[in-house]
Amino acid sequence: AAIVDNAKAAGLKVISYDRLVLDSDVDLYVSFDNQEVGRLMGSYLTKLVPKGSYIVLAGSPTDNNAKLYRDGAMEFIKPLADKGDIKIVMDQWITDWQPTIAMNLVQNALTANNNKIDAVLAPNDNTAGGVIQALEQVGLAGKVPITGQDAEVTAAQRIVKGTQTMTVFKDTRELASEAIQ
Image (cartoon, rainbow, N blue to C red; front, side, top):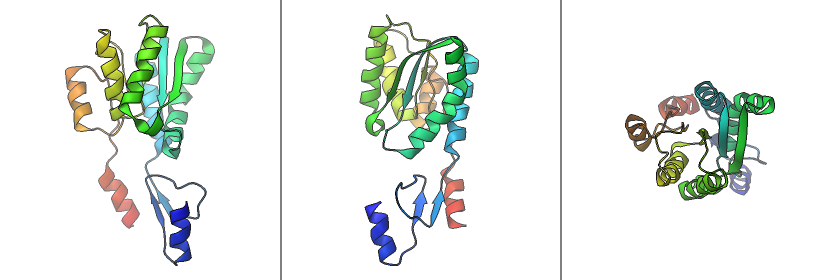
């Protein structure tokens, strides 16, 4: 926000590209429909695993996109949790989207729940990689559905291998085109 304020004071126009700069006066905000990305993940996961123990992970608590993804996914997960079909055994934010933090969180959840985890909402492909490392340690990689987003090459490879269940592709060429428009 301070950088935006400085740019505005210098008479520059500011585009908040893919991340909304909070508490600032940007001229334009262009991004994907981040709630819809979350809805795609939540819908997919709850159709695949409508009952069971879930780990719900969100991205960095300082990233507005992380909140939007989580909100979208929870539109599908929360009603099933409220009904008692889904038990959320962990609901955590991942500082700076760090895969090692995701891995440590999932290790803790696995230990606390005797390795009885049925699905993991991972907020992106990098954190999904950390989740999969934790699952591999207890022989559950490929047995527990895991979401992701960004369609990274490593995620596509994990999907082919069967250790990651899905990813959401967001075409940055389209986002760049919209920003130019």
